Image (cartoon, rainbow, N blue to C red; front, side):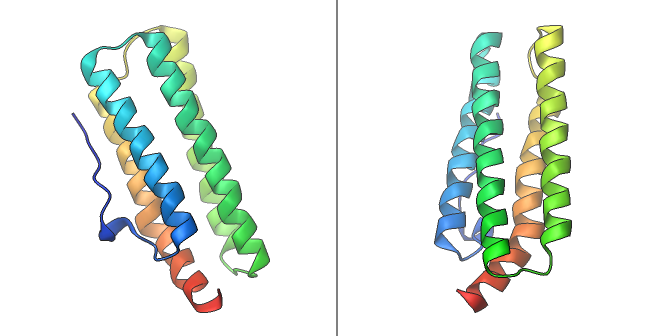
Length: 133
């Protein structure tokens, strides 16, 4: 089972963003555990939907902060947000359409999707926000 552990390596040093990320990590862990335990497709889809909904809200939260503080990386960051949401929605549609379990490979993709964005774009944003907030 993939289980993400929140630690300082994932912190962007901005409390309100870190709090969002901790919620997303928790939802990822619920999803990963559900897949491992063989929970029903309906339950897994509900958890995946919650992860997507919370991620969309979180991305809008970050974008609001970027607009407020005139972050010059907004366009690239927003583009990555949109690409990430499109890819996970595509995964969810495939899962719903085919009525089969998510695979370990798909869970690993989601883990990389979450941690990759935090360790890349979000770290740059956090560094910027620490200077201006």
